[in-house]
Length: 441
Image (cartoon, rainbow, N blue to C red; front, side, top):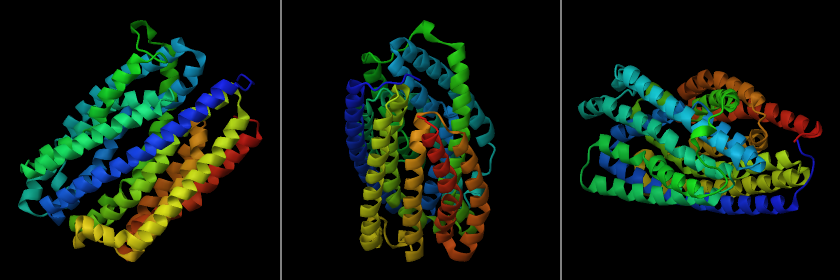
């Protein structure tokens, strides 16, 4: 690692983080607004059972994001470091990653068609009405396929972030989500089928990804080249990607299985209150993630250049942002959350106080965990995260089932908060301290 501080690079890095954070926060506001409009329209259009089924399918479709096998995250780390080494190395990383992702996408589509087509989706989703039973399989299959098709497209946004062009990545996402929200409202007005609405509602990554690729390839930091495939880079990306894959598999298991657990134990009609409060506090989580994506490649660049002072300052800045955002939203949700959900989705989606309180607490703890792991992602230290996430999910699922039986839907965020507090924060926090004291980054 080069041990010097480039003041010009540090200033550019700081500007990039500020611009990306601001654009990311704006995007999350637009995303939240578009999701609120879409969910309100669908709740009234579908009714409690079909809406509960749809939100559960949305959670299941999130597993389709694993089709990138962790290569999106590996790209963010490897390309973020390669940009500092020059356009030749950056081209190797970008081209190699894209070719691998295209191959993985075709394989994932084949697997979904072969396996998903024979699963009893109406039983898995625990629906009972004739219409919901008829819709369960096609809607789930379409959701999975659209998510998987978005994997190579969304790589363009990851590459822009890695090149510290987060403002462009988030601006295109804003345009895509506004367009898709308008299309869903039009579809409800025209009485489209749930299958068609699902295909449209889950397509922002594809639309944004096409715009992001155009912007990326017009720049000079990284380009695609026929001769840039590199076998050694492919091995490095695959090793790192598989570690991220396990990490993301466990993250989805922690965040996205709540609706399925509730549906299995209490029926699909019990899902809307959980889905409503999860979407509401999910805005806080999304802002935390946008901060993380802004800082992630910047941490890697700072480590590559040996800029320890900037690394430490960025840790303090990101913690202050995380605490401020969580504090504002925690107070707002405590005071106005129930009223907002009543107005937004109606009485069938209003959560009880226990569910809301624990969901807010869990998101605060998870935001702190994201603050700890973001610099570790930037410098490629992810092994300890995998260990902690596996422990969290192994304990979370049976604990959530037990607590859901005792406390209803509130049992899910209680279990989530417990495993983050007991495993996630201490394991990763102690490791980060060890890394910093040991002279890294």
